[in-house]
Length: 186
Image 1: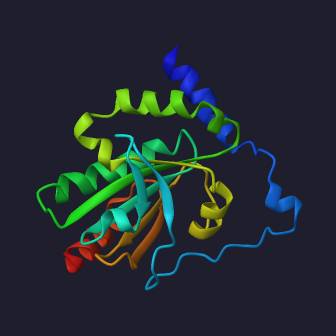
Image 2: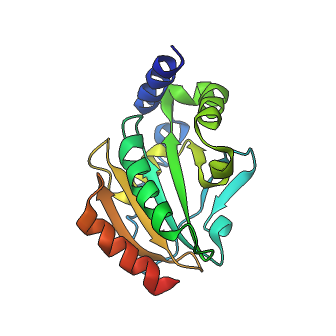
Image 3: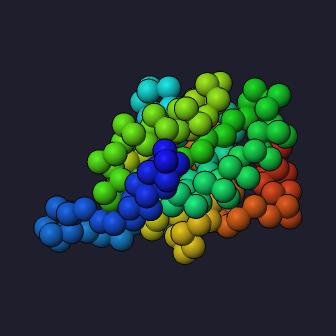
């Protein structure tokens, strides 16, 4: 029952709420992320409840950001994060964040969604999950959103500069590229 309710809420996250900026004509396209530029501010909350601001939260560390925009995208996000964590968990200069980006009607169920994720995530990983409520269209534009169930991956260096980008389901060849890029930045 709980998983079904959470799935329904997250599926609704793609339904738009009224957008004041669109009505006022302030809606402008966001530039796509580019390797070599600083990551734009990404704000949300860790599952621990603390506020999260990237790239500030990863300052001094190489970080993989795995964004997902649908409930189904969690499969790809978790696959990339799991492999990355297995390889780099003993490297203190490297970290990762799973980042569900939630909008639409699902934002109204924020407490329900966050508490469900807290229960389903080991406590020691609560600082590796950042929930973002709102800004869905902005981040979809920035990552070049195409496939709803893909993971959108961003590797940033110790100063928050984007060093590697990819989107898609887990792929071992592309993972080797990611791991090599992360090792060069350690």
